[in-house]
Picture (cartoon, rainbow, N blue to C red):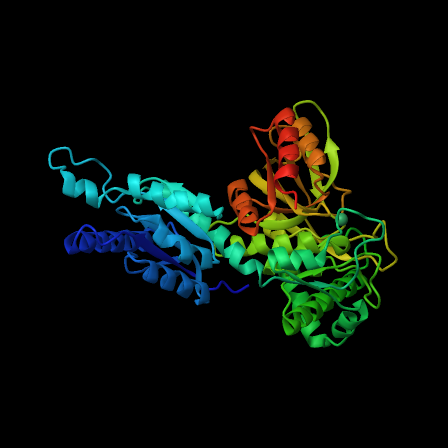
Length: 498
Ligand code: MN
């Protein structure tokens, strides 16, 4: 997964009413801010300083340059002085990328001894940013507003977190999902309108006959497979459990062939996400298990049983977390079974095989076992348990007339005891505010059993992404009450009516 060198432009607004000296200060201050940000280590992407915007013409020109600059993933704006917002209308109407309105001020403290009207005119973002914010509301435009002193670490981290959302927005239009099988028969929640998804999110979702990819798997050379099997054996523990060593290795080799063949096919055709279906495997000898787990770890999106919406979301969330220090992982996930013991409530998360090892904690082992569904040889898979701590689980659903993103804050925990007979990787979490309310709200919202899950993103980032995409987002978190949540769903139904 290659991280693109995205940049964000910092555009400071003013006007020519205050004289050249004031404008020189404005430019100098905004340069100081940009230099400090780039040196701070708190922003995942570089900020580029742009000349002060003081006229309709320059505002329009700059924002259109941002539109066409491939490296620019968004613009951060701040009104150092007053900047009459009618000057911004045309530029903003033509602007198409994420925008952050930073409501800050160059000085942290009022200079009590020296403050005069010149100072007030030069440092009036409290005034100018309100005029500027008004025009977004008047235009009905989506933007992120961050308030605080620009040198504060918390403000910088807030900007950094928004940058990841902005990259998720920009990258959404490059997401291409390969379907090597259709959605599972009769299943409702994994379905959706692919044309609408391309209109709304920019996703391309294409189908290929499963045997076309199976041919590529069969064409992988033995030396290539042997080399990858060696890598597996050196990297993971082997859970032989009485199985024949030679046969075990042959089964692992099948997954190595699938990993290589799939990756070559995806790369050649330019796809970053994939779906499979255990009921439609064509010439593949095993359900892709270990192979898909490894591809997800490399940054590919994945959805089981043809679930292309979740596959695309996993891909986007992996992009949003790219290059993050101490990242804990992002995966496709599925609600499986409950622990309903009072005080220990939670949902055991797993899938047939396909859980991303980026979320693992402790040893990762290769295991083979028959599938309870399907008709292929016993697939090799990676088994592990996952990290603890707060995380976010999301489900994108198609309501027929629109998409809804359901965002749940969850707390990941260790299960009390080992589960030696369970042949799949797992996580275990308690949804906030608790299992009863969290699961009730999730079901009322129509959330799926499949989720795109990450320890490294927040509900704020996912909600901002949904807002930027123009779709409904609902949050299930520590503040959720069912009465309020049901009203929110009712009100949203009216607000999003087309
Ligand atoms: Mn599933």
